[in-house]
Length: 251
Image 1 (tube, helix red, strand yellow):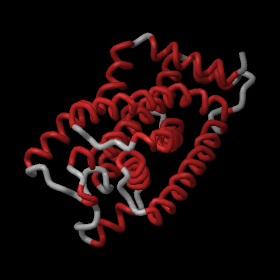
Image 2 (cartoon, helix red, strand yellow; image 1 turned 45 degrees about the vertical axis):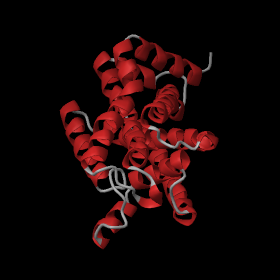
Image 3 (spheres, one colour; image 1 turned 90 degrees about the vertical axis):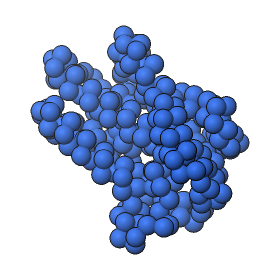
């Protein structure tokens, strides 16, 4: 078994030891959609947003975006678990590249993310009548994979450079709320002030959510989506290089 395959098996075995945690990973996006989406939709009187879609349909991509950050955060936090178990330094002595260490940690979780998105789409369409564009599922899967990978590499830089778990959690929580609310996750950007739109359009979470929205319900302007896809690809690549460099500096 090669080092990359061994890392994937290791991550799968770690996750399989806690079935409750894995079950929560798969179903919590749907819970967000049911609680927040249905609640806001009812409070606003089932408004028709950009493209004539309801809020439940609009919020679907936001839920998938939050879920991708959640999986990426949990995956990067596992570096602390490796340190606490004393396995981290030992892993660095194994005959494998630092890039294989990183990719092995995230690849199993990409499968979880795709399964999570499939359940959310299927039950969202069945329970909330969300008009999912099923013919775009391959594109949606690609965006999900790219999104989780990009955020994992980004958060891994912090996990590798910050030694204290409490400081890491504080930094990640601050980043999470800033990224979440200064984005197109909860609301369309068009009616908002120009300064807010500028901040949101510079936010990688906006790029990801806009791509998810297009792939799931067909909403979005192709020209804007083109540069957002390119920008997120650059973000993912830069995050990967930064994470590999951070890992090399560990020993």
